[in-house]
Image (cartoon, rainbow, N blue to C red; front, side):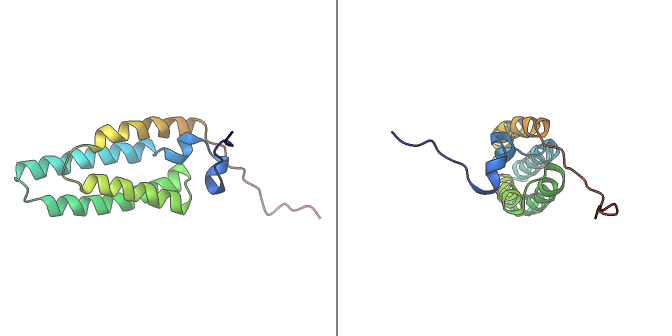
Length: 127
């Protein structure tokens, strides 16, 4: 019998929703930007495709910052999620809202199960 798959590394202490989830504000921003960029591309009959690619790059950077600071992802995890979001936004087809529906659900569940950060006061040290 095969042993069950083990998750190792940074993802070991987090659940499925924390590993694959996006912060809800990052997901909502992605859907809004993707719909706006695709609408402009369709209305211009393809002339705004370079603008859509640029929007994907900028959105990827914003999602990286949101994932790092608001969702608590480590650097590599936030980078991967940001690259996926940027790539999906740069593709001139409005599929991102459908794909991100799963990420929004995972993000909400991940925030609900987020472990509180313990803050210690370094000024009060006991000898």
